[in-house]
Length: 298
Image 1 (spheres, rainbow, N blue to C red):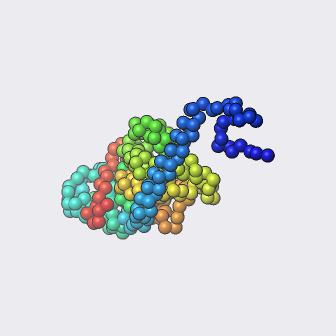
Image 2 (image 1 turned 90 degrees about the vertical axis):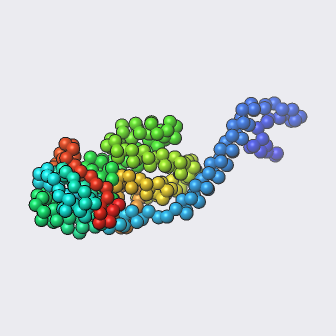
Image 3 (image 1 turned 180 degrees about the horizontal axis):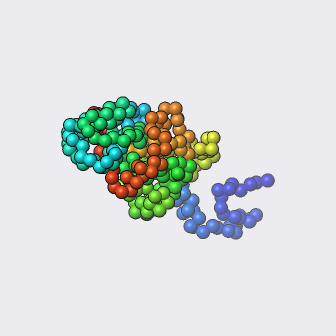
């Protein structure tokens, strides 16, 4: 028995007369879909080649630098001598919390000791996150990282769809409404979303449409699929420079399967964002942040 190919849309009777001819729009849609797939594939291959050439970001998580907070007993003026190693010899008025980037944990505690020896009343020193300080290195935003460690990836993804359709504005509003970061931290996240739109859109769309059959979870966590790898390698460095703290740098295990042995910060103080004194100082504005340190910088 002769079988009509599935791509043949015309239907004929036994004399060869056409009984049914699909509307022209069907052909147009088929051609448009094929063009879309070809363009998407070519764009994906070009962006994937850029991902393959991009350097690893593992150094962002293996660095000895830390964002350290020195908690003062009273609001005071720190002398230029005492701050020379972490504030480039500039005199400043300190709040109850002074946060800076230090070369390592020992440098943080050495600086705290210097302040004590200069007459400043120091209550404690805390490691907020590995790497440099940034816009998210505060108890409010790191607290959100902890509270949303199993949902933040999905929330950010949904807000990225808003950027795909409406640009930066809808994505900003989406992140603000559904996540609740401070405005400056939120901007770092939206910057990252817009970077993904520019550098990873084809990779992510291809993975979203055609990558489902490969599975997206490993042990209940989302795997680092090609889309997330693109984000990590092409946009991750700019994001961490802006945000300072992210989940891994804060010692928080997230909903993405990672190399926790090498990428998870182990020196950040556990649960420091839950301290009432730090939260009160943050809310009352008694918090001074210096991203760079004279003993190594960011």
